[in-house]
Amino acid sequence: MPDTPFGFALPGGQPPDPNDPQQMQQFLAGLQQLMAAAQSGGSTGPVNWDLARQVATSALNSEGDPAVTAAERAEIGEALRLADLWLEPTTALPSGVITTAAWNRNEWIYNTMDVWRKLADPVAARMVAAMGDLVPPEARAQLGPMSTMITALGGALFGGQFGQALAKLATEVLSAGDIGLPLGPAGTAALLPANIRGYREGLELDPDEVRLFVALREAAHQRLFGHVPWLRGHVLTAVEAYARGIRVDREAIEEAMRRIDPSDPETMREIQLEGIFAQEDTEQQRAALNRLETALALVEGWVVHVVEAAAQGRLPNVVKLSEAFRRRRAAGGPAESTFAALVGLELRPRRLREAAALWTALTEHRGVSGRDALWGHPDLLPSEEDFADPDAFAQSQLDLGELEGFDGFDDFNESKGNDEGKDDNEGGESGGTGGAQTS
Image 1 (spheres, helix red, strand yellow):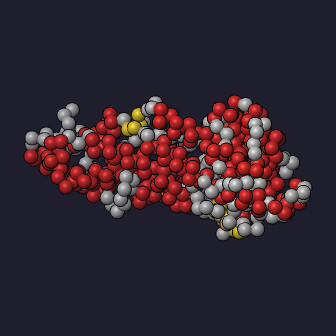
Image 2: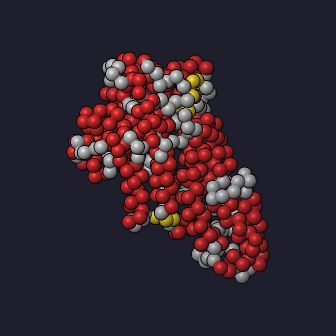
Image 3: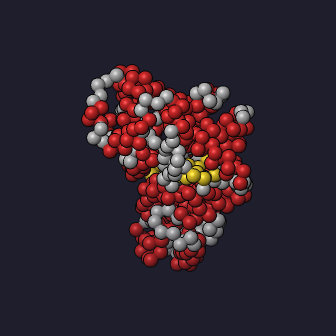
């Protein structure tokens, strides 16, 4: 097939002949129609986020997005407040719950979109640049001003695909912090009752028990990201650093573009961009991926440890619930696989069991405050190598006097000040949940 702009073809599958004015005029007219459709959302940048939201909303509405009832809002608000109370004696970090919420699937997308933009734009920029490289020099001259619309086309393609991936994820996530990233607004603990209901049916457990376990996980995430000031930026920066190193497979992009008919804008929705990312094995990319995977494992491992400690003796099926969640996070679902194929990044933590064992060892050897003091600064956290021998790391020398200089350590120790000497029940009843309100 001869080189053509973006690899597009005329109706019927034949590429236009650059030396035939009539064919080129027909091609450019169709391309202009396609570009107009791509720009219909009025969005700028590497991703058409207006289109992404429209596609996601349309997909959810066609599949079904159950409304949240008043009773469900009340149940979730109560579960989150109780969960936050149970966590009090298990961590030195104070409550991070400012408000509680019960979201439907569309609300999850709306409330997490700002963070998705931050994560996906670097990847989309790579794809858009690769599309520009597909335009032969002679075609660029004929396209003229339309060559500046490449970004709009790439943004629409990526936006449409990303919208579909978000819609699938929205049917599976159980809470705002379910995938380990701080996706929602700071201080907002949110659960998705429709998805929790579906997940619970697969486990065949008591609805209240499953809801409370999910609430414990969400409240733990809120404590961690709410009171470790550097953590949110650390995790998101690690994702961005990895995304910047992603390389796009030029041949995969070209093959996708050839399936677009400029006279039929709907063909954009049928294009699958999965598999467009080339596997790189550079030292920088390996280092970025290692930092990201370690950060995700440490976050998830800490959540698993404190949640199991808080649920012990309170939830009859805590062992079964913990194991089910471990398998769920380790394996990922179909929607998460789709997302990984689209942006070239898996969000599930590796070595989760080792990370949880490490936090357990730290609690045994250093106590709750000594364990959580490690969140005072990123340089204090265990490295991937420390996963191999949790006890050795937990027993290594640690000068707590030096740690008091870190703001994060001082802040949560001060908040716990009057709780010293109290037993677990008194610590739980002493508060930390006073700021939690039902929205």
